[in-house]
Amino acid sequence: MTDKLALLIWAATPEHPELLVTPLIHALAARALDAEVEIHFAGPAVRWLVEGVADAAYAAPSREKAIGDFLREVVAEDVRLLACSMACAAWVGAGETLIPPAGAAGATAFVGRALDPAWRTLVF
Image 1 (tube, one colour):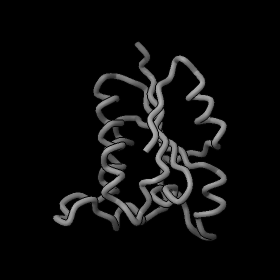
Image 2 (cartoon, one colour):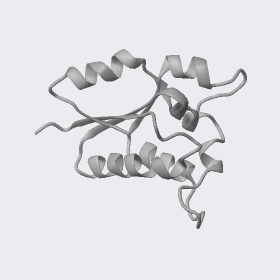
Image 3 (cartoon, one colour):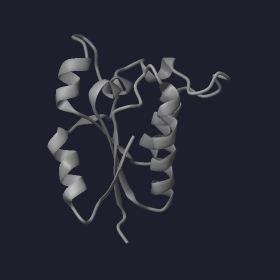
Image 4 (spheres, rainbow, N blue to C red):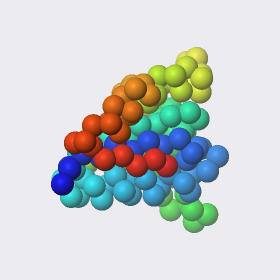
């Protein structure tokens, strides 16, 4: 059994915060099973990694937990957050910064994970 999981988030954009919680919960579940986990953000979903965006969004009308809280949880569990460099060029404005400890990885990095038999991938 593999113990490495890479998630690609592209459809769960800030306009649809309810779509982001499921992949984050899956990432936490994988970490609870001691898997190495990384989350790749592509297209407009990269906006989740821009300072302030996730803290202003909630997945449920009750507004009991911000998306930023979920992101801090996965970071605290050593999940790597990776922003697509092409997405950053298109969707991150001048003067905006990514949340720490978000890193960068291009499309090739995720495709490499998908082709590597040591890794499993999920797309959201």
